[in-house]
Structure formats: structure tokens, C-alpha cells
Image (cartoon, rainbow, N blue to C red; front, top):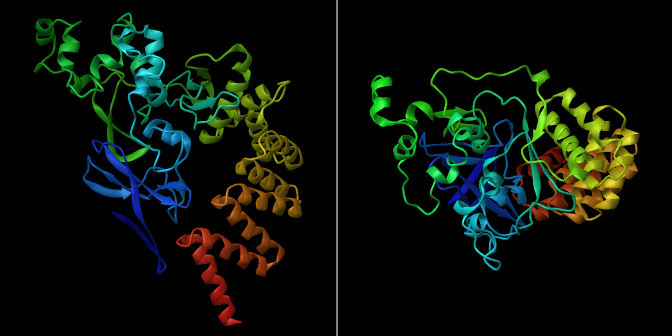
Length: 422
């Protein structure tokens, strides 16, 4: 299959390298560009039997094949620690049974506390997921803490099944008997949901108390509902609610974050602070951002992620010189990360240090030649300085790497058109 975009008489097309998803809800697709995988802007939505814009591209006015698939995505959608197509594979036995080299573990025989970890890694998104210091999503079993809101938001999120299920009265009063594996068999055999329900609820009593009861509970108590995160889809509501019960939701200002599973004491302020900043930035909550800033700033020991988060808040507070210091420390601790160099360049631009910004942007693209944001910002800086020859050379240099990129080809065409008019 080949996916193609045509915009302003420019065409970009790529063969599909990987299909993501079983197809029961839908499928997204990955293309390979250079050393990286990118999500195609178009996905197939099975429930509506239609093609439409892929998740993450909905608000992009000029989509291209430029949404990089990061290790965090692959942590749930594939096995392997590399983005190389040759090493990627579907989710394997070890995801649930842990390392075969040590000893296969049956989650059904674990404690309720331990077996929850099996499902939470991919089915509990929360408001933020914070990696432990020195850990990468590319690690086989990355260590992270998930933070959820003290008051759940109304409606459903795509990856919130564990949180929803924990809210249900059925789960809370089952003393651990009812868990994900009760209804979901990853090995293919179909589970009778009705048998699960009548294991606790008397079928005869249900037929008397429920008007029109037809021996089936899920359609009323766990209906499929749409989610604002992904169009044209509906997901099962795992809260097991009484129909018409409604969602008790407090105002945004009264919500706080809590760890689903508390990290070690030494990381609690660090992780909670990062969670407040990331969730606050995602939800445009100044209150949460300030809470996170207040937790992180006094820390005596700061890692690269903490410095970067503080730098982002200082930029929002229009304190670019202080942001430069924070991003500089993040780059010192993680010198091989292109994102650190790019963030420092953004802060330097805000502080008026254009030469410094150019230097860091060049460093970013030397660390990661496919880091498009830095290439694009570099062309913008050269335009600002009136250095049009360097701007043109930068565009040409990037197109040698990614010759089908629509944004840079459009910039190149502008230069060509302007040259002809002159």
C-alpha cells in the first residue's frame, strides 16, 4: 500500500512499512523515512468503514509524513527496543509473562497488586507518565509512574481502561477476584461475559429486577462510547455503571494529581512536579504548571528532565535568560540529545542570542539529522537575519535527507519563484 498527499501541486508519497492495530477498532500505518518511522496522516476506522485523518494530525492544517513514532509509542504497539523495522515485532509473550530467561510468570497466580502491573503499562495513560531518571522508553521494561486526576474527567479516554475499571463497584467489592484477566483472554479463547456477571449476580433475580432482561449485561452497563481523542471510534466503558447514573465531576480548579502507584520517596516530589507541568501544559492549566514549578525548583538534585521542565515554565513566564541556564544544564547532563540542544536554542532566541541559537540548532541536527523542528527553526532564523543564501542552503540540505517533505519543498519553491521574479 502507498499513502499519498497532494497539496498545492506538490506530491509526497511513501510505501507503508508497518500496520499498527488489529483492525477491530481501526488501523494506523507507519512509513520509513531514513532511520525513523513516521505515522501516516491517514488511518482506517473500521467501525465506520472509512478513511480519515490519523490521531494526532486532526488539528494540523498542513499534514505531512512528519509525526515521528517514538519509543514510547512502540512500548505498547510493538516489541523490541529499536525503531528498525527488522527488529520490531508484535507484542510478545514476555510483555505479560516477563523474561523467559528468568522464569515465565503466570499473572493469574500473582497477587492483585502485582498482576495489575501487567495491564497498566499499556492500558493506563492517566494525565502524565513520568520515567525514572536515567530510564528511556526504548528500554525493554521502562520504569515509570502514572499520575491520574483526583477527580476523573467526564467521558472516556482511549487508554484509561484500568482507571475506569478501578472506579467500578464490581471491581472494588470483589476482593481482587474480578480483574482484567477475568474477562480478557490474550490467548484467543472467548470468555463468556455473562458467566462472569452471574458468578456474583443471581440470574433469576436479575430477570425479575430488570425489565426486558435478555441474559446479557454488557450492552447496558458497559456500553461502547465515543471519545474526543479519536474520531469515528467507540470504546467499551469499563466503569460498569448504572445507566443514567452520570459522571460526578468537580471544577477544574479543584482537581489535583496523584500517583497510581507511588514511586520511591526520593522521587515523589520530582515525579509529581514533572507530572503537574506536563499535564498542566497539555490542559493549559496555569495552576498545575505553577504547582509543578514550585515542587521542582527547590530540589537539591536535578536531572536533565527536571531542568528541561523548569526551562519550559520559565519561557512561559517570559524569563528567557533563566530558561537558558536551565536548558544549558539539561544539555550538559544529556549532551547527545537533539531535543536538549533545540530547547536551548529556543530559549536563546527568546533572550536575543541569535548566534548562540544558530550554534545549538546546528548541533541539534548534527545529533539527529532528521530532527525537522531544528531545521525549520534554522531557516526561520536565517530569514530573520536576512541571510537568504544560508536559508536556501539549509532547505536544500534537509531535502537531500527527506526529498519528499512538503513543507521544505514549498519553501524551496518560494525561493525559486522569487528568484525568477527578480
